[in-house]
Image 1 (cartoon, rainbow, N blue to C red):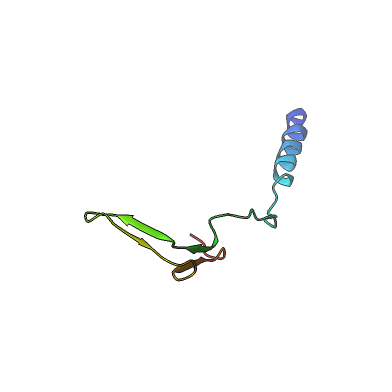
Image 2 (cartoon, one colour):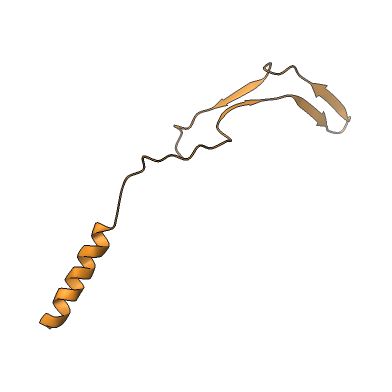
Length: 66
């Protein structure tokens, strides 16, 4: 029984020490930041609308959690 206790305790200690909570590295998501609407087209009537860049914008922030 003592023979099994030391390897099991070592395995438990090793598995728990391998956990890490460092989430400092954040990947840069290309979908975040700012989007601009340039053209809308289609629909039942088949109309096309072209907007100047910057007239309609959406800004997305990375601090939102789901």
